[in-house]
Length: 398
Image (tube, rainbow, N blue to C red; front, side, top):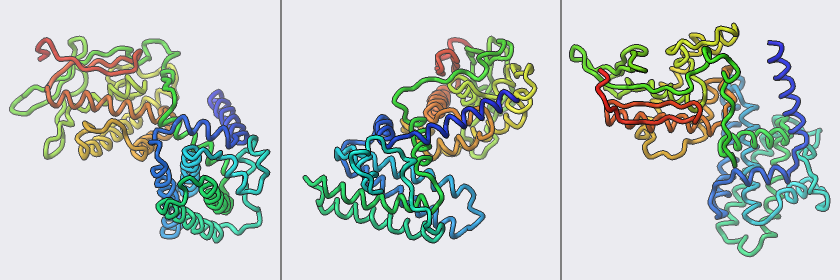
């Protein structure tokens, strides 16, 4: 436990240092690596307008629900970071330096913008908080609307200076909004990079498996070949699972009316195990709980962790039903993935990158759709390759 606390403290200090040192130029460079939007300027402008709208939505909820709106500060920080990302995208497409725009907004000489840090960008300390936040946010929204209006009117065609000037005017109320909300732009920018790099990273590197340093008796099996098949018993259809010819777990029905084939849902647990290296359900099925570590055994591998995984799986399933079980969905939306991450908060997979969750979910549903069609198959979960595969059964498992 003490080791964990020390590790957490070190990580926190490193994050604070990285936040303090983050330059606008470095932010723009890293943001560019996550940019998958098209080259046209319109999409970035619409994105910026949308994020300003999200800031207004957060304010609306705060005014409507007052103290009942939990996570207000975090929501504003996140939306400010998203505004910065789209600002960076607009500047990049227009060959404008983001550091020059932010520097000009705080009256910093252009010659020194290369070393400009977000921690240098602060609103005057004397501003009133709540009242000025609302006023500044309204001004920000007005500037965003004007930016869209002038773009539609063709004001920026062959006139980059006009766009630069309008971006500077927009940044000023943005800075005031952050100051009035008592939020550091440096934190908003750094958190935004962590978020977007976890969702659309320039390089995908699998994190080490959680149980990598434990004895193999307490590791998830590195390769699982599970025969999953449907069989009728007393006029009721059940799904069975066999590994190495041995039945694993309970026979399953949908427990739902009308039937929706949720009986095949253990494939999702296998996908979590293979791609994420996490599945309390699979640990329980194969009796590989981490008994050598009391805390892990009780908290990460216990009944509550199992319920979290089952609840998460059911929640995603209901979302997937509305989208053809993700059959025509090559990418998952950020909001869904963020909700998944929040679902497992407090457990070991909470810091896994969003792209990894996306892969685990989409890979699992790819296999699920094949099982729905074939009604049986061999599912191979490979933790070394970090993937899950489907093969037709060459024999009758029942």
